[in-house]
Image 1 (cartoon, rainbow, N blue to C red):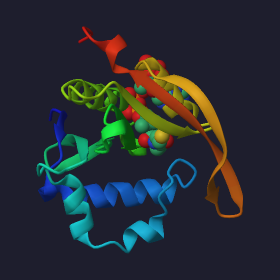
Image 2 (image 1 turned 135 degrees about the horizontal axis):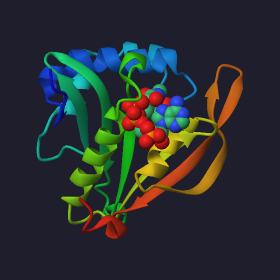
Image 3 (image 1 turned 135 degrees about the vertical axis):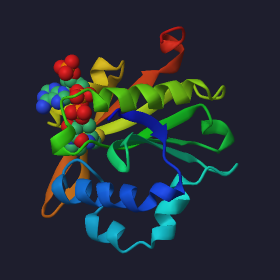
Image 4 (image 1 turned 90 degrees about the vertical axis):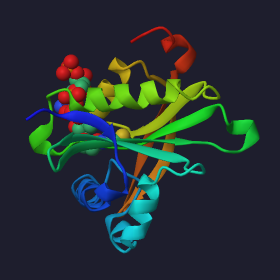
Length: 177
Ligand SMILES: CC(C)(COP(=O)(O)OP(=O)(O)OC[C@H]1O[C@@H](n2cnc3c(N)ncnc32)[C@H](O)[C@@H]1OP(=O)(O)O)[C@@H](O)C(=O)NCCC(=O)NCCS
């Protein structure tokens, strides 16, 4: 069966929710969202995130194979006038069994190609937990550069983790496939 990268619609809300709750539970260091907080949200919250209305500020792409979603990554855009040139890659997750096959790369590529279709956007930002070599290596390979490190960015139990801030200049990527 072939894997396709496509924009997730509200019909995928249950699968998307299950995947993200797994991500938050298995990788508390990697995500700012807390599994219990997100588990308590109604399914309508997940449907809303996937809805494609004219006011949508978020788009989520999934690696889809049949009924299964094998990985996800989202892009959120700014609506405020003075920040409309910026966007953020969020919620990047590929479950263990599907890793190392290029799905992460395909998802980031799709997020960047979508960002390039938005004429107001100049850049994509993201944060990655310091020490998450797999994710940082993936982002660097796709053209993201580090521009700073935020100490004590996220509280994980009684510890704090730092966040590496990265950005990708869409103008530099112009012309690439
Ligand atoms: C990070 C993650 C999305 C990578 O997904 P993936 O589908 O395995 O990634 P790919 O197969 O596309 O790998 C792409 C590149 O990522 C890097 N990479 C992936 N896994 C790696 C690892 N374990 N160690 C070092 N680099 C790694 C490599 O540069 C790789 O390119 P290469 O295969 O040409 O060397 C996945 O490991 C994951 O979901 N991790 C847990 C959640 C997480 O950390 N999310 C990111 C939050 S910012």
